[in-house]
Length: 159
Image 1 (cartoon, rainbow, N blue to C red):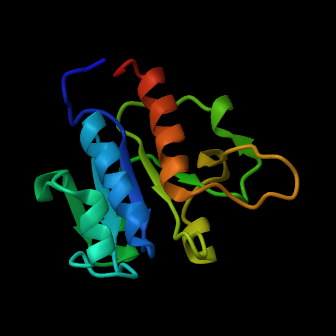
Image 2 (image 1 turned 30 degrees about the vertical axis):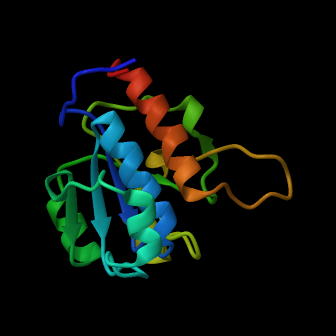
């Protein structure tokens, strides 16, 4: 199924991503679904990394990706927007949340999530998790982004 690409839907934000293959897969997902991607630097890899380029192929369009020099810049720019933090530390499931059209859905680093300073900037009502079986820590970041993005696009009727 195809749909008209729009920039009036949710945005995906990655906090200091550190695995090039995951970021490249997320770029492809966002490109295919017409969703803007925002990356909070520094990244744990170079965009010229061979592993990154192999996965991203020709899906990377600079105009669809916004880079922030730091989390300070990101939160300053987003001061009037709703930021949803996906975290294993949340108590609320993403399936029990009402996404809105202009949400920015923030995902932490693969190796460490987001620091406490970022957690403190986001209200608990906007912290969500993906429920998992006991004794499992987390899903792959690219898989998590795809799940949450699909749910949010479905709720706001963009897919």
